[in-house]
View: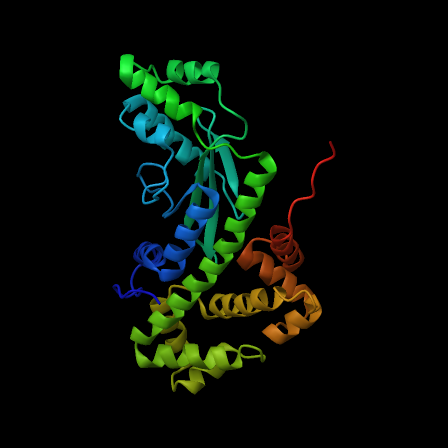
Length: 314
């Protein structure tokens, strides 16, 4: 269940901001966050792109060393810069970087249609046991001025930080990639549900599209169904939804296709026609434009994420 909040109708930036807030407050995220943190021992947060907040803000299982270092201005600045670097150039793939202390930080993008609405962020973990020399290097990089008991506390927290093997961490990130897909679907449903607050004609148009999206429908068909001229409907639909009719229809069909692609027994050709595409080439072209990857790569990535990693040879 999603807790009530303001309507998503408004500017594109307002809709995106409201949507990530809705996802953060949703039961599915909170339950997954709790289960993830208990099972893995790692922190998990969902944040908006460009959010100027401390890394993993909102998570409950923060690395004690990172908490202690948050009061150090240079350390805090380094963490925020790393967070910004993680976002740079990110597409639809998970991005992982190493912080000044040698801890891993990762961001898994959450897309709703063609919009990047946020990141699932985790990390603050070592991929190999920390050492006293590593602690000294970290302190030197941030100009640590602590001494006595405070320094001993920082060193103890550093040396007791969570350690996972690279294959384990890779599997954790695969789980987050799968969950990011679920959040994407939830976000898509939120946007559709909020359309009920729109003017009745646009809500009726959305319902007509949802009912007939598997057929060969055109703007004229929808305009006639809601009793408007093509020109007026086109202008009104774009103003209310923020996208053109053509793009909206493409997004709906791609979302339907994504659900079908989760069934390994269904051929991609059948997925294409069932979603309303007129040819396999059209399906591949539009799916890539909307989802940022081909249907085949989407399915391969999805099922690769669900398979355990193959143990490396000794």
